[in-house]
Amino acid sequence: MTLGRGVVLPDGPVPDARDFAVRCESLGYDACWVGELWGRDAFVTLTAVAGAVDDLTLGTAIVNVFSRSPATLAAAASSLAAVAPAGVRLGVGPSTPTAVEGLHGRDYGRPVRRLHETAELVAALAGGSGRVDYDGETVSVADVPALDSDVPVYTAALGPAARRATGRVADGWLPHNVPFQNLAEAFETVAATAREAGRDPDSITVAPYVPAVVDDDPAVARDAIRDHLAYYVGSGEGYRRAVATVFPDAAERVAAAWADGDRDAARAAVTAEMVDALGVAGRPETARERFHEVASLGVVDHPIVVIPDGVDDATAERTVAALAP
Figure 1 (cartoon, one colour):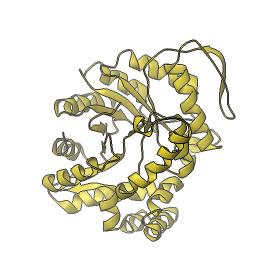
Figure 2 (spheres, one colour):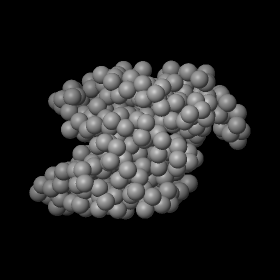
Figure 3 (spheres, rainbow, N blue to C red):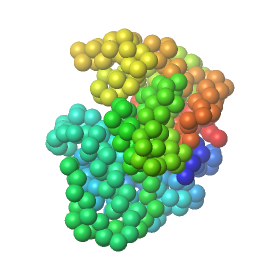
């Protein structure tokens, strides 16, 4: 199923997220997504949102595949689907060693295989019928009743191996920090694998994150995108490699500065070209035009506005209003 335009709810207290979702619905957005790292549970937040909106699709973007079992993910998504007004999309991803090992105390082993098997098993548990047996290399269940819910599973996949897993088992693809001009080429790996597996690539929804900041001062908006990119390129090797497909030298400089603990140098190493290729920033008219360009790419089905962490409430409100459908 192809959606319209979505937005990831900014981090913060659950009541604030609920109010922000109500505002996004009034602006014409079709879907609200919730990320999860620490401090706010994605499913609890989305359940609160579900009771306050009338016609929004709700999604996780993303929850990691290590901290919850596939059965727990399936049960949570199915429970949410029972109260969501317009359906649920379960976005899962491998996250990073820093989050999985440092926060959850889990071994970050075989992340792509874990992603593949979790997506496949969650789909069987949540959306299947009858009883499920699954004996994978990283996850398994024995004789578990399926929940017969409508819960499409999307994967946050960056590298080629993860994109191949997406093509084999996922309903949607959530790329983040893939330069916009490379989305079609990157999706071809998904599509080719889907065809090999006897699946229709057109059935896989492409829902890229679009980091976006709108401000009357373009420099302020661009600096916020620069902060966002420095954090991701510096803290996650998969993100660095994705950006390096177009900006190898700059991505390496950002990552090196971040690893040295020099956050200012990391942000300064994010070039103007990187900001333009990986985000939307500027005054309202400029940002709307650029967002439309990204949304109009032939490969894109569901662009998702992402407000960078650290952006104040007024700027977040201004951004979603300026980029509304």
